[in-house]
Length: 84
Image 1 (cartoon, rainbow, N blue to C red):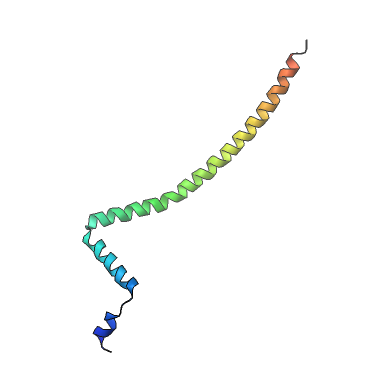
Image 2 (image 1 turned 90 degrees about the vertical axis):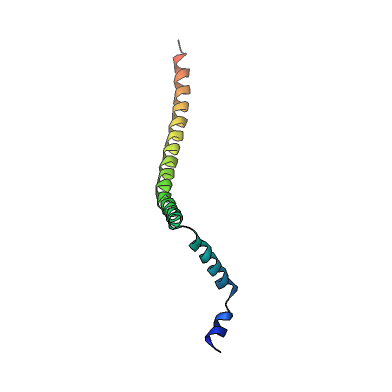
């Protein structure tokens, strides 16, 4: 089996990858660079977004607890004021 015979029996996956590679090569270098930078920015911003969501959730929980106690204590104080 020669070299030509071995290369002729490629897997469909390899043919698909080669086709995709050719399509990417047709794009300009600036477009590929822009796509790569956009993907890197998206990957790096996910850490900040996750941290922001955790902090926002904690603040929301504290606000809910504060509102619960504020509303319970304010109704009790209004009952004490009416005593004359």
